[in-house]
Length: 169
Image 1 (cartoon, rainbow, N blue to C red):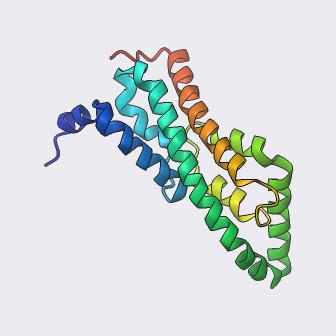
Image 2 (image 1 turned 60 degrees about the horizontal axis):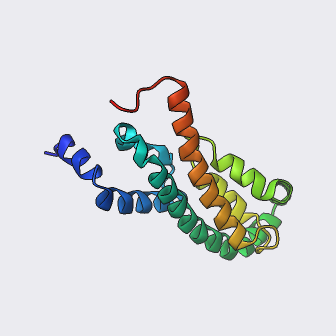
């Protein structure tokens, strides 16, 4: 049986927690439809460690977004062909491309900065409907994800403090 106290003890060690947090953040960006804030629960008793965790989350989201960008670039032609077979498919694709073209990095940043929001769906929408990289540059796409990861952790910290939640339990 798993001992929760033992697991939380390990998570209190930055040498164990930070690599796990990075890997979890990559997985959240690429495949897991869960919010990254779940991984911040062990830090509620260590608010001073929050900034390092925020940067780690940003790094993991950046690495994951690079993978998603590459997947989207390869899938773009397939989506083009599939959507051109049906008029509703073409309209849907055109609508998504217009959305990405209109909102670009600011829209991506705002969506990914919302606490408890899944990262997976917005990342794939922005990468699949990116017109072969014409709308969003990979470097700025990755950097936007990094900034959103950091800001999201900090927004959550601000919300917890504003709600009067004692972080020094």
